[in-house]
Image (cartoon, rainbow, N blue to C red; front, side, top):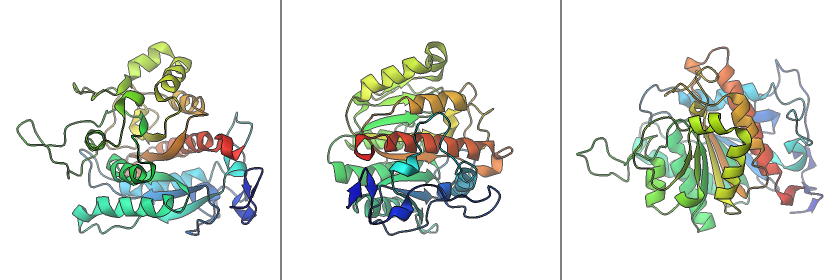
Length: 324
């Protein structure tokens, strides 16, 4: 890749903002070029419109479209408070959505894994927009094949999603289960995740078996504050390869009503965005934003929160030393 000062000189059009009225024009994510040409691309944004693994309300298949649309409102200036705009540092494209056959649900996990592998094997990192949270499992499987070492997880969520992969106490574990509450259980059992160097932030539902994950639950966040969360998280993950996943139900329903399994007592949008921004410098290898369900949204505030959170995560990625 021909780079100068962190920029790809072969495709300079991938950088910077292309100003359009907020009410018209392109509705790709953050107005980025729609392209599956990954030559010189640092980050590919892709949608995974799955909602058949939910335990409550469906509708997240429309999440990628909603978050993309909301992101256009942001694409006129750098995120407030940052001293740089991520798109001035990294070449980012909207890669489009993962295709899978909805009539063959058993084939969906492999389709997602192959889709992500096809991107990261070309040298681009991936930001995925779900879809329900199950999508993180095949995404992590694709990353595990590339990095070949246990990955640390930073998970923003109301739920641990480490329930054993079975429908009830009397049912045997099913490693092929497609369920948005079991994927980190299975990823840990597979050796993909290292719980000791992982942290779950915002949790506020009971699950007796933590599987060794470090949990900074919602009351801990509220009682100890943003800076304490940042400090503790950085201590836990260190310099290990980190995958960051943000379930929009980490936010309190007053900030994000448009989701399938809302739980009261969650983080505010301000808290979440500030914590993410404070994680600049981690070895971030991939990211996703999941569980935005537009049918239950109010005034598009959930999609807008998702778009803001997404840009904070992307800013952490763009803060890596290789892009400065």
